[in-house]
Image (cartoon, rainbow, N blue to C red; front, side):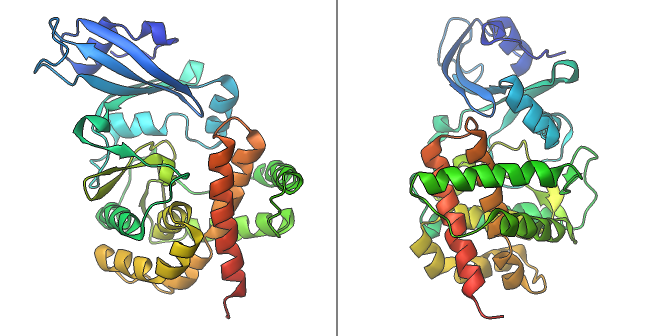
Length: 334
């Protein structure tokens, strides 16, 4: 049975062998990054050969981060969701890294996932600091459409939670909104929106996201959780996997990934392309899509307020895209 390592020093050849189900003779942890989680690349050897046929030469390993982050993920119901998806979930019908192994240690609020390093097949990680093209976003929406169509109004594993705001959410969130808006304004980035408006909009969005027909959602498809391989856009970091309305993934991915001018120029066509790929025509799709920016804005304001989950420049770029989309939706007649 695979255990959850307490430190990176416990990711040994024996541990990697248990994860991969084969004999590993060398395991070197490199490129450790501390964020919401702690993650690293692990270089592997099999029988003394770094590039033997026994297994991948590198894998990507993600384990729990610092205690504050673990508590935040616990509050979101996201601490073990990705590990549960790997161990007990259905096959995902879209581009994503191959999963090799996962384990949880609920007593320590800890989990670990071992997955493919997509750079070995030419995958290039995306970033909010380099907006995607309309063509890339269209490719990503095609992948999301495949996911959503496959699980449309279908039974899902019990660990896949529906989107829901708990009773303790509002006062905690409002404090974060106020703090983030104040610090952004002082830094010369006023958004022209108040904490109360964001809180009310966030609640309204939550009702939409929880409405049916539900499907399986990635839950957090901002560009930093995507990669490009060939002409395809793939999705990793599934710790916020949820069930809910298709429009959550679509609005969040589209708005966060495009430069503001590109989003304004292409969003109607991109939404139409997604619906064509989905093979369904949900009622009032444009109105639902226009309700999504406040969720992205609120989420990234909370990320900015926390200060340690994402780099500040990534937060700012993403916040500005969602704020612009919210202002655009405000100005739209009807």
